[in-house]
Length: 431
Image 1 (cartoon, rainbow, N blue to C red):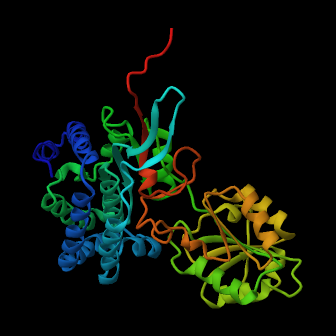
Image 2: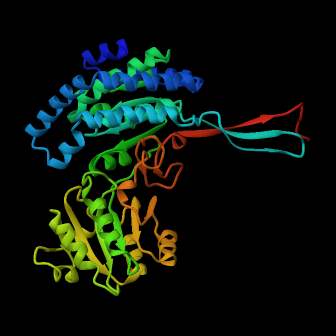
Image 3: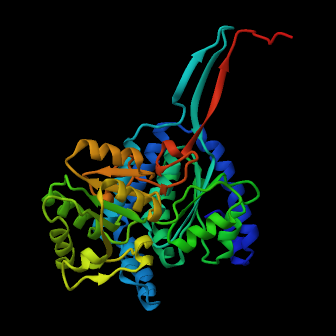
């Protein structure tokens, strides 16, 4: 950690410490924007090796976080997001290597053309600058966000949740080692070393112009606060109220497999399906095998009248259930009158995150893909593929559901902006 920042935090001068972090990040961003791909990739590979070497230490620090979270009465889905084991740590290390293998977007030409007067104009990718990431219980975000910012030439200020503080600090130590070994500024990736909530407020105010964009990753209350208070642009989604619609043209075995995976693979991720819509016009009964498969797998089903008739284990759904992000083994199920009814339901209750249709009818699928308004729309695939790594981006810094600049998984390209390069040979504008 920057010695000045450390001293200010020790003195409990949060505002001065955060402003110092911002200045350090801005300085690091200028250097990082001109760094070579080789240097950035070396930093990532060294950090990956260091994470593997420090696996026992990271697990030990994660246990401290888990013990505190259990003592605080955190639910099982929260503990699952917080927990690190050797397999997940290997996934973090592999993710850094995957990012290193990706093409470097910085300096790439998006478009180029020549004007009649001889001016040659090109639009090229450049880093945004300083990215602030505010997240809760997922310590893997420390590595994912830090690595994506580094590869895209941005400095990162990371503010993890208090529940994951020790885990995140252990991971950051490995990232810092990679930066030093590659000859890059250590301040390129900084972790806010205080759990004081005032630090978040200072970040949202932009640290005197140091932060260019904020990315929140966490629950509804965190994202709402960020969106309400931020004085800088925000890449975010408020909730992941994701739907899977099973059409009359679906292969039922495929539909069951997709729905079980979309709901239950990991219930606490934002791409988990929270509502199942089933076409009541199917030639065969699709609703029954889907509902029974969910119930038999231990999922609570909250259903409409048609769904209640399937199995006495189904609970009656309330109006609130249709728009709820459960993040647990709970799903709302409704029989709908075809694809257009499904589209209308999604428009009313969805959060524009990820939606899915299961059907073998190409025309119906294309209608759904064209008319549903969401950042990610799936056809015959689990909504849990809503992930930057699964999209071939190496990792993601978050999922954005807004319409400006970034939408869907925020990866390397989404962490860049552009500038115009204009090359002439003495041209002047006529009077």
